[in-house]
Image (cartoon, rainbow, N blue to C red; front, side, top):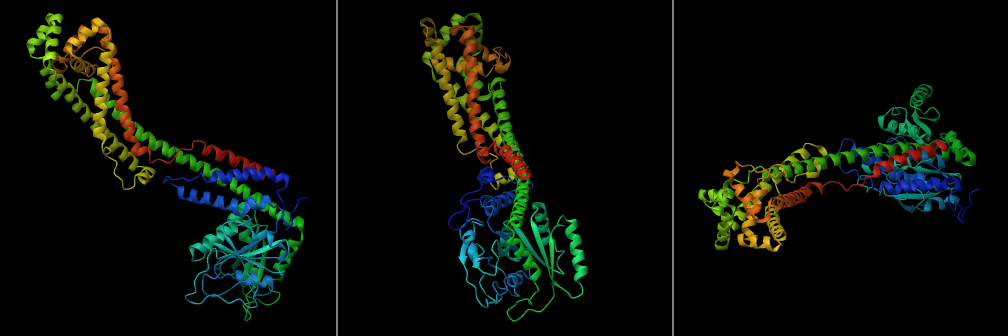
Length: 589
């Protein structure tokens, strides 16, 4: 037995459902993380599916698991003008809801319950998103349908206690499932998803309409108990129409549905059906309400079917999340590849001699002198050192001009390749629906503001680090005397020239590049530091430059990557596991 509080409600879920409630609460919490932000095919439908799953967990599944012996909620739903409100009035035996000719008629859902069971519905146990309003019975509710009448809010639920409603079941008069009002249509779907039992009302000339059948097929998928009321059947056509409708129900998996026929008839002055018109349906509902075992069977059957349908919905969400992850990874890969290619092109330009031309070559030649200087270098390294030392001590400006020329040339290469990478990424993303959505109207095909200045600053920082490398390498007294005689700027300029003449990271020089001027720097540095030290310094300088260039480009590509949704790598797998656990829960029940 389930323990109850002073209001007749279960104090807590029975032990067998506690594990299920824990699982369902975990799933409900996790659904808040399912955003599906990328514009992929089917993403809109998946987002609606996630919202529907959250709503159904809140409105029906969790409340029912927490209180398995709560009264059944029978939702009366159907097409526009089918006579739902009139049917509810007939079941109560007196007017309780409004009926009219102008649509939409039912604007605000009304929940009729036995007075002794008010506590089950006054709180937020079911349909927690709807506020509660307490209604009172009136002898003749005013009809709706007057022109200009304001619509009643669809975010509230009117609670109406009526002794005509048997204990154990409550009736909820829902808006039209095909209402011209979007709000009414959405609310009708929400209420039907919260039902233990559907009383589906249609008419003799509209029972094959597409919208009602879509909902009936959903009912079949959830194994919900459905009572179909065929209203306004012409006299003499009962057998033919009911047989055709029964055939449709059987073919669509609803063979177990109860079918009730209401003949076409005149309503009285209060809009009430003739006495006895709904007796068969009223008796069936009363019998169900009085049978505790029968009610439990209906509740469990609907609950298990809903959980089984939820398992499939969660599995579909897992697939959608996985598709989002793959799309985001594809866009990220496109951006990363474009900027990695740009970094490769920059580094290729720094080692294939391309920078040892133009302004850099002119400044270097100004620095080292005329052709007679090269002949001197070949004849006598010692004389070369003396001459260079005097040159550095007397005229430091040419070395600085070499550094400036290198900075300008390298900056131009970096900025140009960063712009190429941005254009490439922009084109790739715009060819993808998800990327196009993320970019929207923003043009990211060029470098970000200030990038050229950041590149120049990074090049100067690299040159400073290179100078520090020379100072560190020349710590020995003998070596220090040598490099001091040549000047730090001059040696730095020479090392930059050597770095830019190295092919594929090797120390061998491209003799033909820039008229062989790189050989001068090589010989000078070897005369001061030795061949091994020069190779080591060049390798370090090149590695430092590569790191700085890649970091510049990595920072630049963030203007694309920061638009990608936040990564949640475990979400798809978590949803897939939860879907499996839900399926096993439904099977075990």
